[in-house]
Length: 89
Image (tube, rainbow, N blue to C red):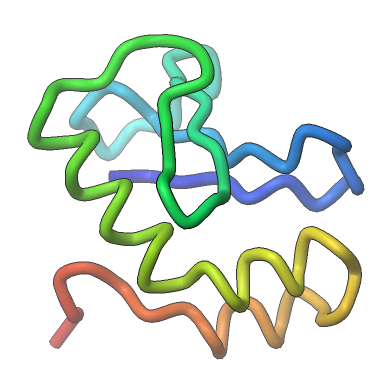
């Protein structure tokens, strides 16, 4: 799944999750998910299995996502600090 983390200091701090399973980037086919200890669907729709995967991703990466959201790290730190679900490789 493709996930966008806001890099513009957006107040809402929600991540955008592509709702379609395709290699093509479709920024208009997204759901918004909160960055919180209990991630919730803010807007849009996700399949139950996708929602569970996104929730696990957010909870596993909550510290680095929040640090990036509040400007405590840069995009390089974010990329280096993300733990993917499931692990790649």
